[in-house]
Image 1 (cartoon, one colour):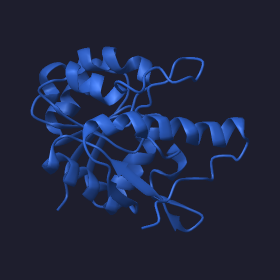
Image 2 (cartoon, one colour):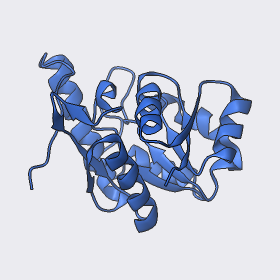
Image 3 (tube, rainbow, N blue to C red):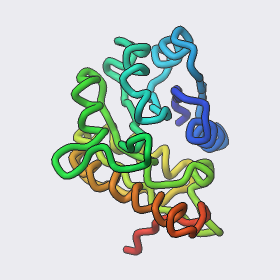
Image 4 (cartoon, rainbow, N blue to C red):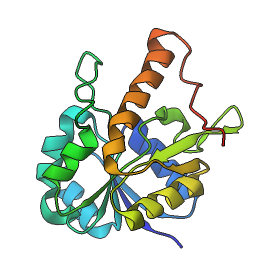
Length: 193
C-alpha cells in the first residue's frame, strides 16, 4: 500500500530516497530549506524522513514544530562533527537525542549505514545491502522495514532505539573505509544469516 512520504532535505540522501521510494510506488514529496514547505510537507506526510546534516537537526526541528507530532520520524543522519569525527556514542546517539527533542514523534533510525548513491536501489554491484532499522516502537519499525524492502534492501530489525549508537558507529566505519581507506563509495554492509 502506498504511503505518503515527506523527505526533509533535497541533497544526496534526500534525492536518493525520493527516487527509490517513488519508484516503489509511494507518494513522495521532498523539500529543501524553505521553512513553510518543510512544515507543510511534514503535516501532509504519514512518514517523515530527516535527511539533513547532523548540524542542521535542531534548526530543522524548529521549522517542523508540531508537524511531526504523532508521525514516524526516520533519522537518516550521522552524528558527526564538522571534521568528520563521531559527535556522540557509547552512552547515547543522535537518534536518541532526536527522540528527546521530538518527544511526540516516533523516531526510527535507518538508512544511515549506506552511502547515498545506493539508497535508491538498496544494492551494490547486484548485491542487496542490509538496512538496519532501530526503534522502540514495533509498529513504526515495521513500517520503515517495509519501506526499505520496497526500495530493494534486505531490511533487518536492529532492536531498540538505543542500538542507534552502534548503527551510527557502523556508519562511521563505512565512511572511514570509503574515504580514508580509499575503498570508494561502491561498498556496503551485508549481514549474512
